[in-house]
Length: 82
Image (cartoon, rainbow, N blue to C red; front, side, top):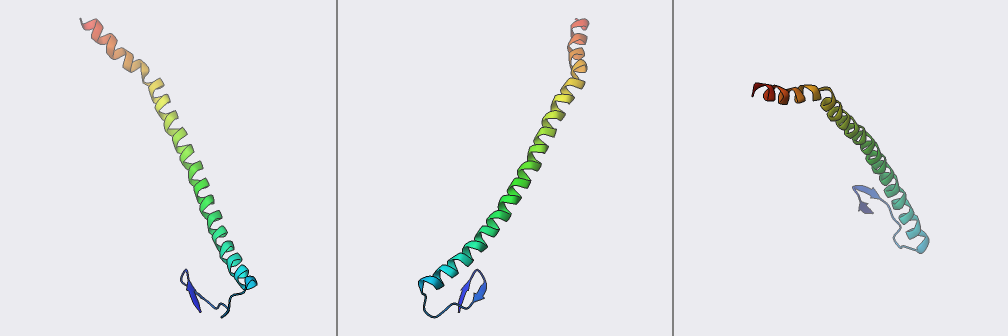
């Protein structure tokens, strides 16, 4: 009995090439499953963060556009006061 990744599994007493291949294939399938899950999570997070970045840039650009007259008027009032 071999304990691997917290799971107890019964392996044959003597390893042959076919037994070893079966063990490796089982472990590789488990690893590939978790790699797919983590790749899916990374893809999901990258899409969400890209949308957040686009929204932030749009907010900054639109805020500058909407308040540009107030910003320019500050300098005009200073020039008129002189």
